[in-house]
Length: 294
Image (cartoon, rainbow, N blue to C red):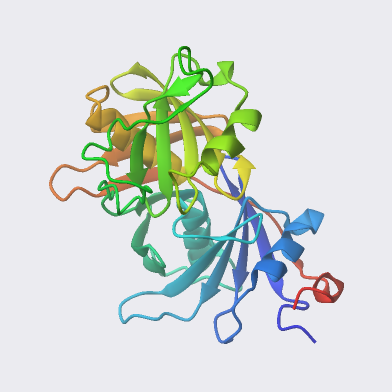
């Protein structure tokens, strides 16, 4: 029988960003792309991101977390998902330790400290953004990634052009626009996500700066599509706004699912994200899901 058969999962969301949390601590099993897609096909376990907990790999950390997108690909970071994992590891009756208020989670992108601020409110230290062209990565050198050559649409009248590139554990391209809702993101998103300039694909953000401390944002997530919220995307948008001298270092980022408080801390360059989580239900994975997902 597949190692995931009958495993308990938690269905949660961070501002509508659909998160499934799966605890594989104590097991050596690593979820495959096919298995992740199989879980995503189950309506009750359907996710934008699947957060899979493994035993801690580094002293001083609480768990190693693998992150999967709907298409089965792995992501390096997920801010909304990290807040959901932090809640599960503190508040869930089976997974949690109610004595804790702080956790350090490790992902393939690095360490993510999380602090519980309230019953369902968490702050995650997303680390420092990576801004060099080969860190994002881009397919060719750009000295200034705060505005690099990329456009979509007619060459003399592009629909979008000159984004800012930021890596917040995942590659992001932030386009500053007047109204993020004036664009057909469902059509534009996949074209830009898979543009040859992004060898690892990219998350695409449409950001409108309403005030130095307020950004309105829509996100096309790499491997997941349009989501109600994206924590790493909100962080990337603020970093891009500061780099373009459009925003302050602290701002509210308003996404379709709600608001996140983002700060690009000056003293160490780390980006802090604060927002809520919501537990929806728990379930177990049907063994039939994995009959052909080896």
